[in-house]
Image (cartoon, rainbow over all chains, first blue to last red; front, top):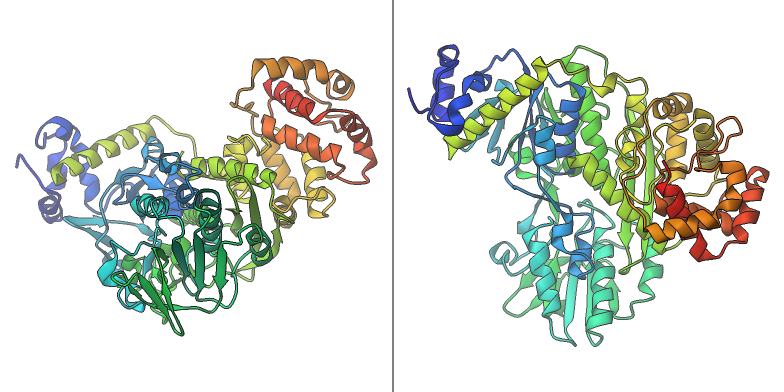
Length: 426
Length: 201
C-alpha cells in the first residue's frame, strides 16, 4: 500500500480503509501530506462543491463559494492551465493588444483555497452525486456546471474535417493568435470573410466588434483589402445603430444580412450560403453553438438539445437536483450570453449554494450586464442591462446604450476589464 | 501523473483545512447588504475599492452623497449609460442598504500612481478648489462635498471634463460653482488636478 492511484483509492475507500491511511506516507515527496486524501471518499465531514469549467462563471463561483463559507471544500475542474479572456480578444486580432495581456493563471483562486485541478470532467452522475474524471470519481454535495459553449460543427458542411484550417477564434486562446497571424499575413487586396452564426450564440455583439477590428486593421495596414460579413441573422443583433454608425468609417466592410453559411471548402477557399458562393483569402467562420458537451451528455439540456434551463434564483438545473448550471450554456433568462452575466451568475449561484448547504433561505438576486465593444483602436460603445426578480423570474429593469462611440467609453471598458478580471480570478 | 495530481489535491486540502482550523471568520455574505452589492463590485472592486483608473472608489463613501448620486443617475440627471440602469437596480434593491454597505467599508486609496511633475502642477492649479474640497481634497460630509483624495485619476479627470462641458447634472445649482470654476481651467490642468487629488491620502 505504498502507492495509490485515485481509482484504487476510491475503490478501497468504500470499504473503509481510508481512515487507516491517516498519517501514512503515500509515495514520496509531495505525497507526504496525504492525510486528507480521505476527503476523496464520501461522506466527508466537510461539504464539497465541485465546479466544472474555469471560465467567467465557474471561476467566479469557485472563488465566491470559498469567500462565503471557508468550511466548504471547492474543487474546480478546468483542463486549461490558463484563462484567456474572450472580452478584449478581438483587439488581439487587430494587433491593438497582445494575447499575454488577456491571459491569466489560476493562482488567485488557489489563494482562496480552491483546489484547482487541470483535468476534464468526463461525465456527471447526478443520481450518485459524482463526477467522473479520466481516472476515478469525485463525490459532491452540490455541483456547479459552467461548461461554456460547444460548436455544432455538423451544421456547416466541410467544417468538422477542416477545424485546423477554418478557424473560429470564438474561444480565446491559440486560435485567436492563429487567426491574427492569418489576417496579418494576408496579401493586400485580399478578401477576409467573417461569418456570424444564427442566434443564440456566445457574446451577441462580439462578431460585429470583430468586424470593426478586422476592418480597422485592413483600413490602416492593407487598404486595398476587403471584409465581407455574412450574417445568418436578418440584422446586426446587438447595438445595431451604434455599429451601423461605426461602420461608416469602414468603406472596406461589406455587410450581408440573412446570409447563412451552410458549407465551407478550404481547397477552393470558398464558403457557400443558401444563395451564393463567396471566395476568401482568409475565413473566420464562427459556427452555430450549443451548451458545452458535458451538459448535453449529462442530460442538462432541454428539448432543443442545445441549452440548459435553470431556476432563476439558484441556477439549479430544472432537470437534475443539486446540479447548478451557469453562463453561456443556460437559456430562459432575458440576459445575453456575456462575460459579465456569467460573472454575476457565478456569484449568485455561490451565494445560493452556500445558503442551501447551511439550511438558510436563498436571497433573491438578479444579474446585471455591462458589455463594451471596441469599434476602432481607441473608441468603444456599450450596452448595459439591469434586472430584478419578479415572481421568481429574472425580469429586465432597463437597457441603456452609450449615445455614441468615444475614447471615454474605451477607457471605462479598460477599467471594467481590469476590475472584472480581478473579480473572477483575483 | 495521477498520483501527483492526487498528492497535490491532498496538499491543498490540508492547507485549506488548516486555514479553517485557524478560525476564519464567517464569510462576507453575512455582511448586511452584501447580497445587494455583488453586481457593483464587478466594476467598483472588492468592497467598492476600485482597482482601475476609470471606475470610482465607493468604499467608505458618505451615505447621503451616495444616495444623492444614485437618485441623480436613476433620474437621468447625472447622465451615464452604465449607471442609469444600475442605479434603478439599486433603487429597486433598497438604496439605504446599498449605501450603508459601502459606507461601512474601509476606503483604500487608488494604487495607480501619478507623475510627480503632474501632481505638483495640479497642486498649484487646484488652489481655487481648496475652499470647498479642503487642502487635501477630503471634502466635507456635513455640506455634502465629496472626498476627492485617493480616487483614481482617470475617473477624476473625466468628471472634471463633464463639469466643464456642463454634462454632469445640467441645471443643478449645487454644482454651479464647480462648473464655473472648471470652465476657467485649460484641459491640461484637469489631468494635473486629477493627478494631484489622486495622490492625496
